[in-house]
Image (cartoon, rainbow, N blue to C red; front, side, top):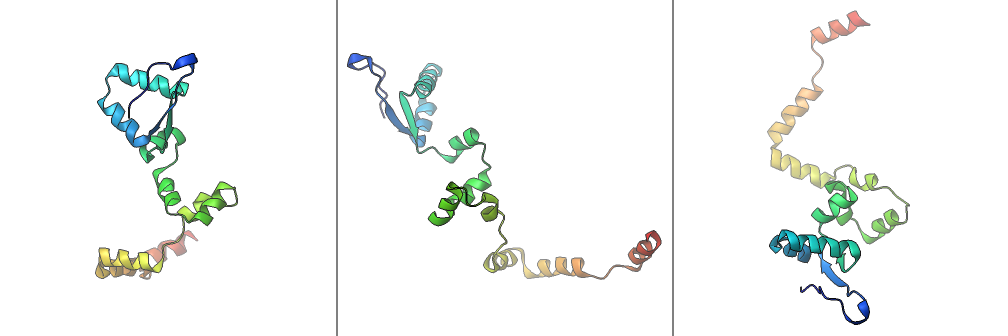
Length: 137
């Protein structure tokens, strides 16, 4: 994309629309001077930024990456709920894992390891644990 640096007739600045990917490419190739010109053009409205990347929007909005990924996976109806203030992002972000997700985890970790951890968490307390508990109580 070519930036317009001259003023058109009648002194009205022309606005250029730049996507986030185009801006990244422009800044990658630009010298320090050119970067300063691009920064000034962004601040004054000569360049309008549309379609920012997640890496560009993150520092501006200070939204955690996990919330951004959650928003990307929502249905249009769920997005409308959040847009109009009828719901909270934590409702969708902190939802319980599905049975399919648990099955994938067990397959990835191995059933033996999962069962070993379950045995460790469900074993009855040792006699020393019971003795300490009765002494304290």
